Structure formats: structure tokens, C-alpha cells
Image (cartoon, rainbow, N blue to C red; front, side, top):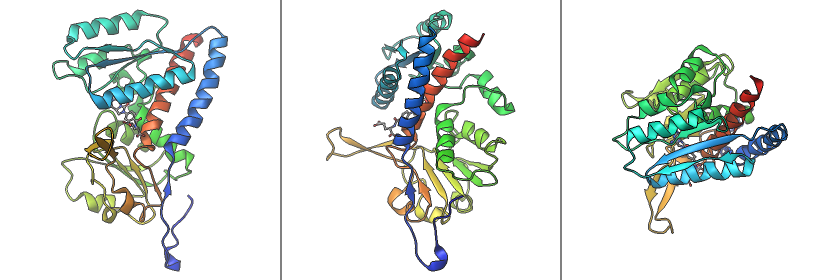
Length: 304
Ligand code: L34
């Protein structure tokens, strides 16, 4: 663990800002060359990203995923369906993609419109093609420590921590948010032997969140709510990972909004030793890990 806060000398140092964009770009470069090797052997990794409806944030994330596919030299079989697509239509598309041997990965972008049962859809994706790691078989494997595709955002966070040499073994890690996409799988990943952290999972039912985050060496906020983590909630020298991507209306921006995380960045960076920015922190890592899962799904088809 690199200690950066010399409190003894009476000075403070602003946190290192973790550059997720740069780390993600490096990973994607390595993935592109592995993809080229696989293609030379006759297999072209292929992902289908399915988007139902026109949610602006989802459109932006899906665009980023498709750009990454093209940059990696992978095939893109993505489909955008209208908001009023029925559950049966979506299930039938998933069935087709499950049977298509040229497709290695299937991802249904969440959230889905209210009339579609998210679980039914996620359960229908073949576990071998589940590049999100959301299928119950893959979540089950994660729980018992078997090899399985790891959910992209939690995996990206662990890779970021390791790339910065932030010690997780024996560390007290607090995860705020219990979503199936981030909070729950991240708590599982951090408590596995290879991370070896002592994990506390906090959520909207947590009483006195500050008393818990204050003790943490690593704080991860995946609450989806600005100002979830304020400077007085963070121990000096802690690493703070911000998963929130909140759109705040801002008339001064061309888009009409600005992005902000869950963490009071400017104040918390004066207390923490490491901090991720929004944008440019965890988000790009999610995309890089998705490319990795797609590549690995394609590689597996060659092994058997
Ligand atoms: N099935 N649904 C499924 N899998 C996922 O892994 C996701 N997620 C979350 C929403 N729904 C999903 C994503 O892809 C969130 N998410 C995601 C992906 C990428 C980024 C953020 C969230 C990202 O690239 N963020 C950029 C800024 C993007 C912008 O400008 O809007 C960043 O630098 O943080």
C-alpha cells in the first residue's frame, strides 16, 4: 500500500485521481490484439447488444459499447427495438441469438420498459453467452468461487484497484448500494480470497451510514444519488470509488445536463488518498470488461 498522507508532518495532500479512461484504453488495446489472433484462427468475436426503447442514458452507454466493439475488431449484431416491443418478441429474439453460433455474447441493456419482466429476459440468455454475468447460473458460480464471466462494473472496479496497487487484502471495504448490477456482485467479489477484503454492504435501510463509511479503507458508492458520500464520511487516506452516473439539468451545457457522481468530489479528494472521477472513472472500465467477457466467450467456443 502506497501511503500518501503525511498527517504527522501536518500537511495534507490531495488524492490521486484514478484515470479509468486511460486504464480502460490500455486494456482495450490488449483485447484488440488478442482479438486479431483469434480472428487469424478463424473466429471473430461477436456481441449483440439489445436496447429496448430510447432512454437517453442507455442510448449513450450502448453507443459507447458499440464503438468499443468496432475498435476491438469484433462483430456487432446489436438490435434496437421500439419501446412497445412485447416480452414475447424480445424472448424470441434472444432465442434466435442463443441458437446462432456466430454470436458469442448477448447483452440486454437495463433498465427495460416496465411491461417486460427483467428476470424472465435475463434467465432466457444462454449462460455461455451471458457477457454481463447476470444469469443466475453465473451469479451462483460467482458466489461459490467457480470461473464465470464477472459482472462488468464490479470487475472493472477490482481491476482499477489492482492497477493502482490499492491494498484490498485485509482492508475494510464499504459498498453503498445493493443492486444486482453493481452492489451485490461487488460485495461478493471483494470478499473472495483473491481480494480478501472485509466487506460491509450498505443500502437505503442502513442507519447512520457515516459511522460505517468513516471506518472504511475503501468506499464504493453505487447508490445513484448525488452527495451520498461527503467529506466528513471518509477516513483520511481512504480510497473512494464513485459508480454513480447522475444527470443533473444544466442550462449552460449544450446537452442540457452535466454528469455527476455519488461523491462530493472536490471535498472528498482532499481527504482520500485515491478517488475516481465521473466521468472518466468506473464507466469506461465497464466497457473494457464487457469487451474482455466477449473475447473470452469467443475463445471458449474454440476450446471445446
Ligand atoms: N445489461 N445494463 C446491462 N449491463 C450493464 O453493464 C449496464 N450498465 C449500467 C446500466 N445498464 C446496464 C452499463 O453499461 C451502467 N452502465 C454504464 C456503462 C458505461 C458508462 C456508464 C454506465 C460510461 O461509459 N460512462 C461514462 C460517461 C458516459 C456518458 O457520457 O453518458 C463515464 O466516463 O463514466
